Image (cartoon, rainbow, N blue to C red; front, side):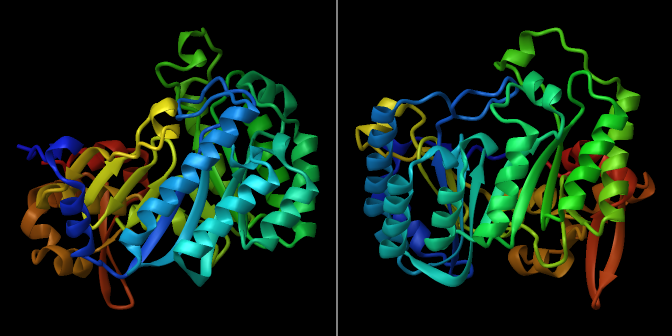
Length: 400
């Protein structure tokens, strides 16, 4: 039975939480996530913590964000920042002076490594050459552009605010501004989408030679406008074909799959995502942002009024039990194509994966879903091709 380790903020004094965190510097490294919850218009499939904005609300939010960073950064002075990720929402909605304030504050209160990966998510409908030049000037060295499709009719169905032509203009401007690390988000299994249309999108994007491509299948989430609509979604057979085409075409153009939904040129794997999958330390600032530092997890307030009042109480604090840590090590690590390194598991937990999950591992191997490999004399457990297809089934086997 899973141990119940979730506690409320009121039960644990802040000083004790910070003491616990500072008592465990896993590797002295920390990743920052900065949440910008504003959008021009919410996409019809989106269930993220985001919504429309006005200038007054945006200014108040940035002020609160700066205050939270100022108040909490001293608790992490022993850490080196190796990654910063501006997510949303639409971070590229912020005006240049607002982004300048945030970047200036981060540089002032944190030790940011010289080679830190600093990423901003951007909607093509909110960019421009001046913003891109500014991003590079203040040290943002990676941009993740949410395209989703190269077909305007599909973008319209999704509720996106941009066209493919606007994306192309901003992609070219990003290159002119000096970005040498660009990710493009793509989505398959869209309403009415054909295999031919998706193939065309993949080939168009590959021909632009971005360093990284994230390719996701549309998931209809409860609470989104799509959930209550009758949509012309591809059937299971077509969705399967779309999935296969992704891997085939991206591999043909020199992208290697390093995680279930992520492909990159060699050396351009997302550091921010890799920290999450390997259970590194990450600290979230902004509305509803999540953190996980030294096996303590929590969330920021999710109500805008509460957050902008300067109340940054940690919510849903969870001190992860040993079992929960092992669970995460397995199902997050197995998302990566190289799988989990068995001696790293042993280093953290003083047991081998077989000691803990011997029956599950043996069963999954017999079912052709898990395989053992060796890389540079190090032993790994990883998903087979069929295991990737049935990854949710595999992950469930590692839950206590």
